[in-house]
Structures are given as C-alpha cells and as structure tokens.
Length: 272
Figure 1 (cartoon, rainbow, N blue to C red):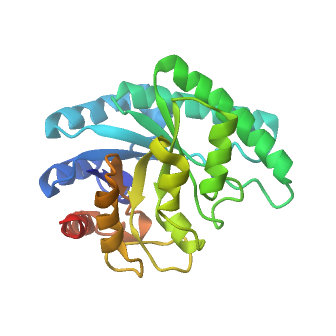
Figure 2: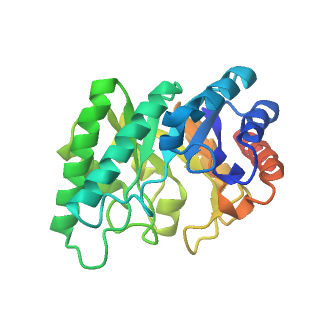
C-alpha cells in the first residue's frame, strides 16, 4: 500500500515544502489539492503547471492524484441553474486535463450539497447526468474519476457505500471508480470494511485519518477515537494494494511540516 501526502494543509506554505517533505519523510506520492495559491486548474493551465512538473522532477515525487475543489463555492454541480451545473462540468473537465498533464492517474470528484428542497429523484437525475458526461470525457482522454462519499455535513447526495454501488450500476465504466475517506462511514455508524465487499475492485483509493466520532473533523492518526491501528492491520490482512493518502487538512495548517512528519510516522508504525 502506497502512502501519500495531501497538499491542502500546505496552502499557507510554499508548495515546494509539500514535495520536499513528502520526499524526506518517506511518503510515496503527493495528492495535489486543487485550490489557490497552488494547484488551481485555471492557474495550472495558464502556466503554473510548470512549477508542479519541476517539483515532481526535482524531488522524484509523483503526483498520483488530483483533488480539485468542486463541491462548494464557486463550483457545485449539484445545485443551481443548468448554466451553473455546466460551468462546474467544464471546470472539472479542465481539472482532468491538468491532472493528465502532470502525470496523475486520477482526479477525485465528490458531490456538493443539493440543497434542502431537492427530492431524491431530482438529485439522482442531476448526479447521473453530470457524472455520465464527465465519465465520457475521462474515457476519451484515458483518465480515471475517483468518486468519493462524504459525510451528511457536506452532502445529501453520495454519502455511503450503497449510494456508490447504485452510481456504478447506472454508469458502468472502467474509468469511473471509487475511493473511501474512512471518516465518512465511521461517523455515520456504517462499516468501513463493508465498502470493500460491496464495491470490490472498484475501490482503489483511501483517505486515512482519525476521527472525533462526532462530525466530519479530520484528526491526526492516533489522536482520535477510531481503532485505526486495527484498521491498518485489517487492510494488510485483506490484501489492499491501492493507494492511501493521509488527509490532513486545515486543522493542522499552522504547522503542516511538523504534523506531516508525525502523521506518516504514526501510520507506518500502525502498519508494522
């Protein structure tokens, strides 16, 4: 199992720190967060991708995945007018292009909140229409979409393993696969490992982090209430061979370098 560093927590630091730390702390790859000041797709298209490519080469640290911001402001394909939905789709297609250009294998896509007045039929109609269009584009450029389930505090659309199974049944494609942030099932009283049985080989990526058990807050591995060491051992037992990014986000933004080191050391120890 390859362990990745997520760059979201480095948004107040030079992006080079993330690549340098991934190399010196023993991470296997970088998962690039797609927000400003570094990694925003329109900026990458306008020339800033050359800096990312330079860092990949300098630190011999691949960007395996790209995680754009597309489920809140200003892009959320699940709410608003058709013009707003199409704007979000066009943005995500650009994200796929930029991910391919930096050598990333996949782009992560999740669902924003569809609003309190949308019915299930309306939500699923809009979701399937959007993801089918995005999947067709991903197929045309040879890229993968990783769909993520998130918590009820973040979305009312794609929240659990059954939702993901349903989406894959409606849009069958080798270019549309799944990932799991282990906090999402934990705080919803759902089994983490049921995902592996229900989704099988289409589950190809993880976000590993600890939880306070009360909400979507992401806690440094080993400092929450999850049985995280046991979960890491279970991943070894079932032979999971995909990637796993330690998703430290804004809770550790003040000292990402210190917590980036602490996190990888903790997870490596749990896997021993």
